[in-house]
Amino acid sequence: MTAEVLENALIEAIRDVGLEAGPFSEPISPNPNETKPRVQVGYRGIESVARDCSGARSEQVWRIDIRIAGPALRGAEGVYDCSERIRNRLEGYAFPGAPASLELEKEVPTDESDGIWRFDQHWKLKCILFHERQDPFFDRPLGA
Image 1 (tube, rainbow, N blue to C red):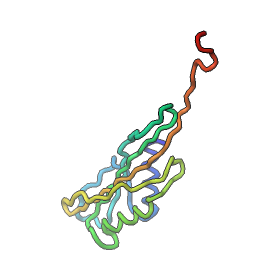
Image 2: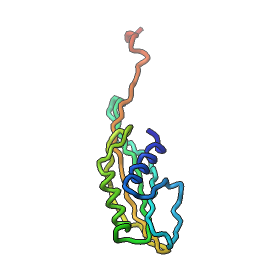
Image 3: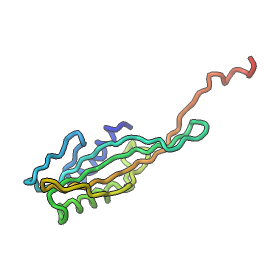
Image 4: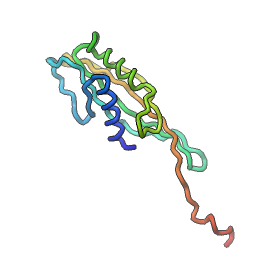
């Protein structure tokens, strides 16, 4: 799985709940005349959190940020409503090809400027990887 595949899968899942979504590479311009909220999805990176002593098993945490921006904070098309719709759709969601299901780390309001409210969700995807190792000396006796 790549960062781009992960972003695209999350964008499609968010679009399934009726929200306009795109990657962070398509910035949200502050337009106070905008009436509908928009969502951005961004891959934040991978963190290796544990590895066993053999090196054959490791744990990684993939981090993803979702930003919701809109002119209204409350109401049917407000930022709070959109945040709840995304949370309900993605919490525990394991899309095809994903090594694990998504977990919400935290939700935070970020700011309001030019009449646009911004609200961030930080998600993680914790997975366990198995690495195949080959010993080039497995068929040679010690001391040979």
